[in-house]
Image (cartoon, rainbow, N blue to C red; front, top):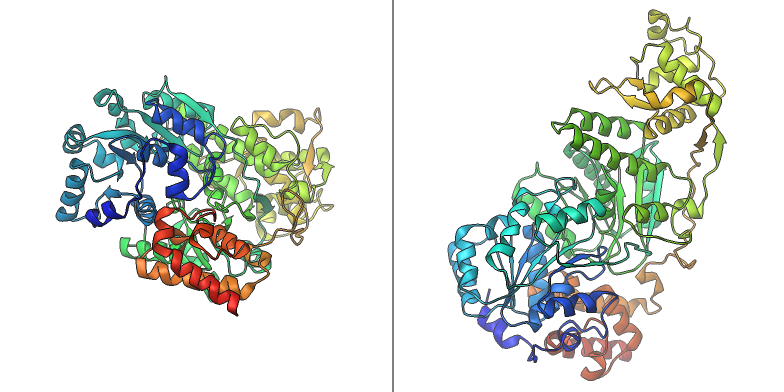
Length: 618
């Protein structure tokens, strides 16, 4: 890191005006909702707890105050990739930013520490495990610190999906640095988790800023799992061919197999999980950030803090454990605000597997009860027949007054049917066969199969044998899936896959309570509608001058390769789009393009203007 070079390149600012910093450094005209309030609170020395959706502009809430308040802002970040990504982007803006992490050798770490001590840094990113070391605390006491920003603050929650024990120690910041403002930020926290964050980080007196959780550009779609690989291929080919995307799987083996399958079909698909060596993981992540059209197939180990704006889809081939995890992972799509898709398939085995994992965990009864509630909420989203977005937002305490019009249940409302008799048959069959068999066997009994096992166990003699021929195998699978999802049946906690009755099913089994079931829709092509009713078009499909668009992208890629950063760090797609629409011919006109700050104008302005001039001549 050449701190002297950064010091000379940094734009000259008064360090007093957040709006001026926003415009001159980051190239934006106005703050988004709540950003201005949060920034002024921190600039004035107040503490803040910020909940803002992924892509909502959380980073600016501490980056702008860092450039206004005297001293260095210390940002606690959980992942090395997140630090490197943000530091690279800030350096491109001319901001004096650096990180301290395990990738650095002794000399690099010493240079960064010296830069902190001599006031040459505006922001320093640090992992929580490094920050809590006595040596680091001593270093900070001897430096001028403007603020502490605790990113991904939900990691402090032991009930959360990304718990990290080192975050529990961060309360020491309040004790050791009582006069320094602290801001904690996250995109995913229900009311319970917000309270826990405030308590564990000693932010109970901080102002809370809760932005709306809605991401209207994301279309939510959940389908029954029939043939997951074929469903995924059909989805990508029909709607996202050539787009960047993330595919999440529960196991490493499934990640590897899915990546191979997509690669065999001609896609650039790369695996990412903890079983790969660090070099391969880093290489695959680097390709995802820098190349177009790359699909990463990953476990949940991938994605936190990845600031890639043009991820057009996030697909789940397995059910997430909670709505927090689902929201966090799907939120990695469409950070640029353009139409994107959150697509998932799930089936009965997903439910059984997650319930078995939960019951077999080492957690105490309270932990298991909380986790059951989270899983039930996730299943509720899958099986709902009304607007999915309303259910998702309601979980986080947000309210959407009207149905969104941009989820599958709004675009293709599911049918329901009176499942009372079918449910009685299913539950009775579980009981008559001794609560010792899985769904495939139970369906065989209901449909009167004459396979060897049924005859061997004498289940061709039970009263439920052959009474379910009116439904197909897939229809019965749907019945059992909904019974498990809604808590009327449970998976055997010993892990053998058998289904057992719960106390909750008693009124259904005795016919005292009717039940409406969701009718699984036949696969249909996307309606191609977004939340506002317009066409779900990629940016590239909105471009009238395709040759000009490709020329600007090529120019950006060349600049990115020269600087050794991903293309979006130079300019986002939305900034290129704005350039193509405005066709600026002078530096002052280029400065009005959204996302072109002072440093980028000085560094790349003439090159971009030349590229645009070449377009006009052609």
